[in-house]
Length: 220
Length: 317
Image (cartoon, rainbow over all chains, first blue to last red; front, side):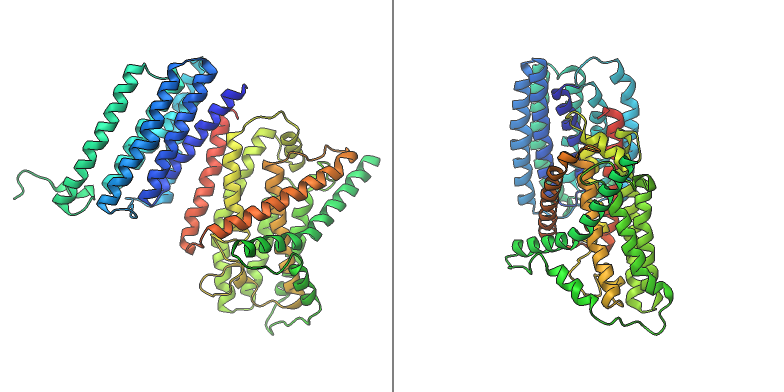
């Protein structure tokens, strides 16, 4: 195997590891750092893919990923949790070893699902599709199992990372215009959710989203 | 015949080396821990001084001690010597290697653990029983994780004999194996748990609420205690040697290559020293966790080992 393909595989494995670490993480601050690391690995992976395939637009995409997901979004999240004063607690709905076991099942499912597709593909990154899908599913699991709003948003952003990685591994990234649009969407979404956090806290005195299940029009 | 004699010679020299080196390795780790905590440290030979002190003392046995209590230290030491003999450190032509593969190696560690727990419960003190229970809790979780860690290199080498695995891994072309990286992290976590190191157990404490390993050997004295302490040191060294052999086997001499042996020995000692310093650093930066967090810690190790196997199957590397 060529060294670049090995490096890409290694980055994919690293991303999977970070996804699991995020799933097991108890502290919001560490969760944000892990998210930044995920962005960094993603950007590095884009650079390697760009270098080994000669697709120059991937360099811009890597730069965009770096600026947005390693610097800007973690910085916004960091400011948010300081302002909201929710630095420590992450409550999970089920205990962490159980989440891990579900995570393993999801990984096996994703790998099985991706195997026939990656056998058909001819890209250098084809074998990483399974990992990309596993990351999407794991981030989804993280959103489901967390009670508070901030970890759920981080799970959402991690899911976007997974989708980006899937796009890289199947088609060497999306067209630049689509990528710019998605990046803008994520940024605006983050800003809106940031404002939303304050509103939620004002209404319920907590960021626990299970309170929102009680919203009924007939309730008075 | 000549081949057999050579491998026997290599076997005996490496077993002897590990047994002699083990207390120094323990001293080295303690020395580094002291340095990292801004203390001057007891010196490399302190474990040897302790052993010689213990060997010259008279043993005290409880009145109701059964033969199990008396033979347990010898069995533990024997198990560790056997384990040390089947992990290749300098050359991959060990004569004892066919006796036990990696799966049997896990069994050898388990045998030692069963006897230490039986002996701890034998006297009937509450501390011994408590320690034995905790030890079994940790062991029941770390053993499957250790087995799964072995499966990744085993699948790469397509053999369960340590000789073949190390020979395959050491003499292949350079390639990045993400699966081995997963397995290596899982292995380090299992190493910390099995050797009673800091995130799981503190080797330097006698505080009844937290101790695991120390509670097991509370009733032992003199030569029995010395043998157990030595066995613990050999176990730590064997684990480090195992980690080196599986995940960083570069520089190990090919079978029958006697000229490369001094180089391989030097490389091994350097790698062991680095591993010891790294272990001390890891212990210094982490805090001991509650015992009920241990299942989570070892669950994580198990998970990483499974991930290693899965990525090997998916990526083929």
